[in-house]
Image 1 (cartoon, rainbow, N blue to C red):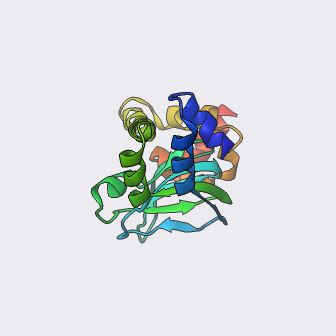
Image 2 (cartoon, helix red, strand yellow):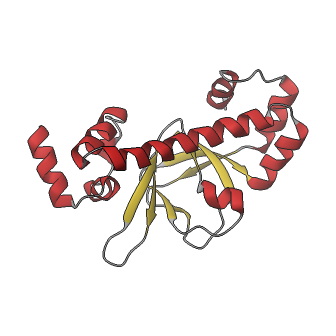
Length: 188
């Protein structure tokens, strides 16, 4: 929990009372690899912070899943569109590795917003983090080649990318596993 407090105190000063209210709403949960955190058609009820692990967001298809996002250590994770709108998700969220999350329910977040002055700042910080990841991904698809997308992922998370199956990485950068193999051969 100190990790989360230190992260938040970089952006906003927390009084002991505010931290007590916030931390009392957090629950630490551990998930094995390949655990579905949110199924297609369910409404997201959690805004979570990843203490440890890798999480994949994807649209399940009969012939192949379409991976469109990953979350890593020290980042926020949520099917945020479903979380905010309270409507069912159109995609699935699943752990790739053993994962430890600090979770906050939608209802508890509303309590934090109403009972603390810093709640909105913390909520905005999490929201901005999730938005920036989404915008970065969209711009990468518009501006970068698949090879550049692969290299960026490799540079950003070099120790973690080895834990992600190649078929997920290929889907994430918008190519086939065979094309990814060719890229990897070319750059090695």
